[in-house]
Image (tube, rainbow, N blue to C red; front, side, top):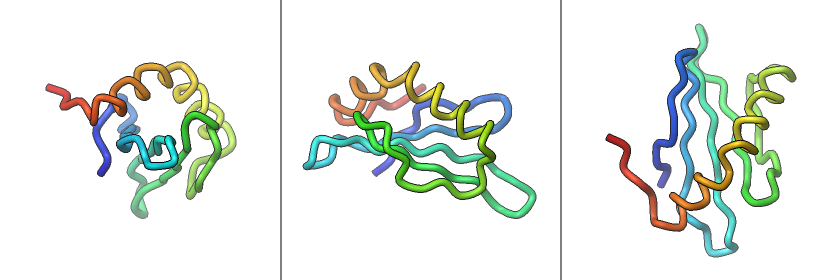
Length: 86
């Protein structure tokens, strides 16, 4: 299951998973396009890119910066089993 984390004015949506049995958390970045969606998924705590479909190198760099700056809070929310945002 993916839980909502943030939505930015450019329609970038970030979601995260529960803590997996191997102690990882998946963080998904998704943004609508004219042809569907761009999507990228990362694994915490390693920051490993699981896949990236459609994000440019500069967008990928920005996504990775957002991930690094928000990692602590995302991990905290995932460890709580997901936090419902109002």
